[in-house]
Length: 214
Image (cartoon, rainbow, N blue to C red; front, top):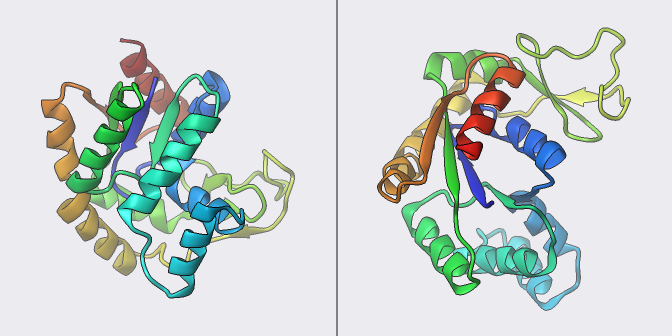
């Protein structure tokens, strides 16, 4: 099963993707992780990525699609979670063409719906483990009392510089302009489902599982 978790920044996509990786043996295809991995790989594609990033330019959709193709061809999994791609209708078309060319399908698009006011509260309270990237939140999932990450035991945590109300408003505007049109796009393709992104992590996990298993 190949899926997309769709939603604004702070909706909890990364947290739920990690749950699916652990419980369903899926592979999370994170655009950022793939670019960093390719940059250091020394492969032909990696050299292209390194050159573009060295010039301070944005990596083209064609390069990202090439990286996704490589992962789909070389990675064995029960399914893939596309993380950070697509963000635009053009990218959605490119991904559809790639999957069709490879004889694969996009089975589900699950939208995590969270109101803007709740996103601001959630984002400004967010921190991550400096070692493994596990996400914590002062409100819904505070750092353990002993000050150690529950995943790896690390004691260093960090907050993103742009996890503030002003930066979030700009990121939300970009989401509504570029990415939210994908909701209608995937609804028309009959693969879109929506879950409430507020609440406890386990409750959201159960809602997503219900959509995937339907």
